[in-house]
Length: 234
Ligand SMILES: Nc1ncnc2c1ncn2[C@@H]1O[C@H](COP(=O)(O)OP(=O)(O)OP(=O)(O)O)[C@@H](O)[C@H]1O
Image (cartoon, rainbow, N blue to C red; front, side, top):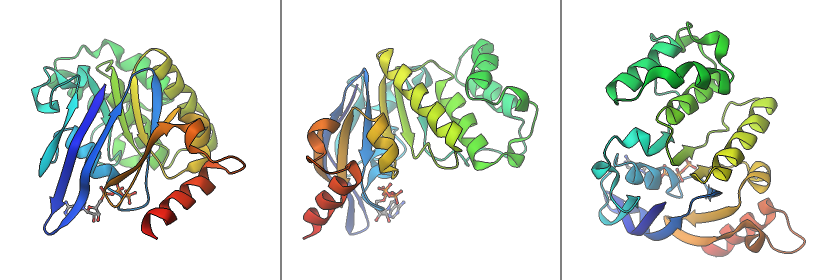
C-alpha cells in the first residue's frame, strides 16, 4: 500500500505537487491521470525516494522508500524505460540488477519470456526499440517479485499486441493482491484497465475514486476527464 500524505514539492518558486494526499490500495489497478505537467512523475519520484519532498511525505508499507530493506523486493518501478545502459545485453542488465540488489537471478529467464523478449536476451539494449525497452524495464521492475508496482507511462511504444498483453499482465498482478499504480494519457486504455483513479492537475488532487463513480453517465472516461480538467482551471 502506498500513502501520499500532504505532499508538496516545489522547484524554485513553483509547486509541482501541492498538498497532495491519496492512498493506493492493494488488489486493484489505480490509474494516475493528469494533463502534462500535472505532477504525476514528481509524485512517483518522491514515492521512490528520488526527490525529497518540500513538505509532507510518501510511504510504502508505512515507511518512506529509503527505509525499506531490499527495496526492489517490495517495489518495482518503471519511470523512464530508456534510462538503461545501451552497451549492456538485456539479460546482463537484469543479472547486474539482481546481483546489486541481493536478488536471485533464477527468475530472469522466465521474466524475459513473460515480457516477450525471450529471443533478445543476448542483444545489446542500445539496439532495442522503445517498446522493447519498456518490456525490459518491466522485467526489471518484476525482478524482485514486488508487492507494489509503480509504472509511469508504461504503454509508450508498445504495439497493439503489447498494450493488450500489458493490460492482462497488470490485471493478473492486481488479482494476486499487488498494489499497481499506473500513469497514462491513454484514456481509452485506462477505461478498460483501471479499477480506481487518482486524478491530479496543477499538483492538486481532483478525484480519488472508483472509475465507475468518476465517469459521468453517458460520457466516456476521456470526456469526463476533459470536463474535470477544464472545471479545475475555470
Ligand atoms: N527537476 C525539475 N526542476 C524544475 N521543475 C521541474 C522538475 N521536475 C518537474 N518539474 C516541473 O514540475 C511540474 C510537474 O512535472 P511532472 O513531470 O511531475 O508532471 P507530469 O504530470 O508527470 O507531466 P507529463 O504528463 O507531461 O509527464 C512541471 O511544471 C515541471 O516542469
